[in-house]
Length: 244
Image 1 (cartoon, one colour):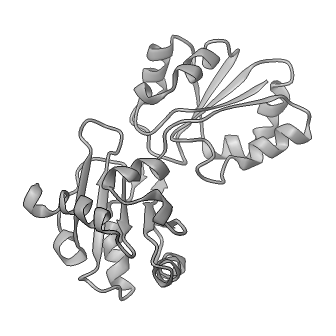
Image 2 (cartoon, helix red, strand yellow):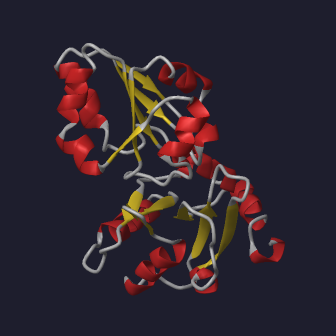
Image 3 (tube, one colour):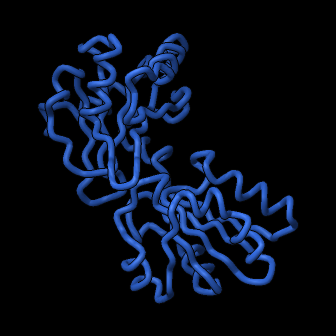
């Protein structure tokens, strides 16, 4: 059986009880960290769980996924994925290939930034399409188009920030991209850092006021609110600079 096990939002302590129970019966365990930030490494997870874990790179999972799926026909194979395993489309191919080849599949879901942003006080029902700002963004316009389309509908826009090997894009880098693409510096943004951790930070303000602010903890993302309900406005007031 192939077990796709979500690790949760921030570190090893975010794995669910169900996830712990499943991984302890697996014959082989693998960890991928290329799609998302995760504060615990393979060694820390090994010590926490008490089993050997093999860290796999992007090319191993994308180009050699069939090897793992074939192996799962006769063994219990567990693949750890930070956040929730299907918050992004990256791992849908594993699900599809397993089903095509008649391999039994078990999915364990976990906490994700897509729901953790509710801590800002912004209603999850009022979010539009999500977008990601990549590192190499000089000629990338899709995040701006997503923002424009969401604004037409009065919806909030969540900007995820690129993760590439050991590099993590900061909120400041994302805001710089917005300014370079002619987004008004007076635009309200809500910066979110380290959601799920004890050191998390949420800060609301205009781009011009936060562009040089030091957001310290990772992972980071930010939101440009759309039309605000009065309860959302009240919630965001708690995260203004006067309350820091």
